[in-house]
Length: 463
Ligand SMILES: [Zn+2]
Image (tube, rainbow, N blue to C red; front, side):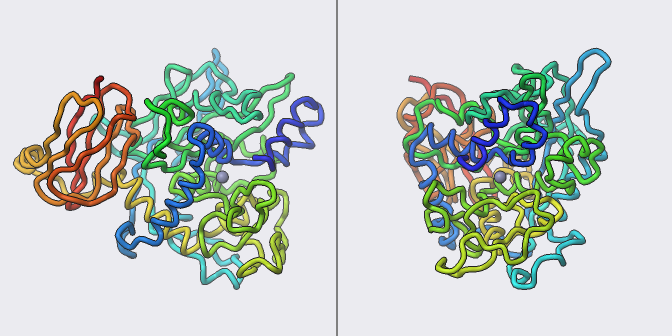
């Protein structure tokens, strides 16, 4: 954040100069999310990094075998400004469908410019075998286009507080009561909102964040505030995109041409990378930690990189090397990577280890997205599932004992917004006692996953 946030702030009092300063405002709000979580639960970042490493090194936590595609259901919420006859940001279906295509080409490594990758990095470029489709059923089981449209009277969701690290004005996009649109069950759909995150200040409209995503955070850190107080409570899971940055056929891209990010629709590719557990390729280091293991992205095969690549470089130098000699496994900066800030037109790849990590997230923290994939079960099976899962006591105050007939792989407790609030990834059988003393009073779903099936039971916590 230190890299860009003072720049944004510096722009604000000099609104008349803002046009010349705009290219320096970066495109992704991930560092703000990161900071918010660290504030809510100090030590979050270290725990998150440790979890990446443990998951990558644990064969039992690995994803489906290579050759098996993860197909993610997506709902796109278009939140557009409407005031009388004036309407802005209500993107047509053709742009949204195009964005899904761009995502699929990136995550299946099937677009035309993969060949532009420098030869030394070609062996690292991988097909993630992850794809995306607009949802065909809504949460009630009814047919849908996978696109919702909500008019709002809020013209610009960003406010000056964003420059101070407070993203609550942008989070309004995810809540109907705040002028946005409520999520669909976030454990079953990747929710993508399209809205206007720009900031109006002193009569100027400043581009702020082009995209922002919440990372997978199951389980919550042990020191997470009781009752989900803190940043995560306001942060609904999913991705927000600035409407200008959607698709590679966007009719409004020229309004942001001075921003310099390019027009290939790769903001969404980058943000979904965060949603699937990836960090920026330069590792968002604290001052003084550039090019060290502490300032790394936690992925072994991405070259060390001190900072983000300039979005204006057209193209960046092939020999650009911000860490250089003395760094372990020194290589040039990999500015073709989707998790950099280089111009859209030059981004073309994920690495093998980035792919392995995203697939591991799909098989673990995000596994509930794929529960619709197994063959439908019969009524008799549903009844036997019901019998297989027992919970005591109900309501519960401090703990629950979960009884299960057979082996299970993992447990989840999900709140009524669809967010996982407790995850236990230890496989077992018989009875498992789970401490729920950190969860607030309310209704939840207990989900037990075993044999490729999900067994669900509503539970109540009251004290
Ligand atoms: Zn980012």
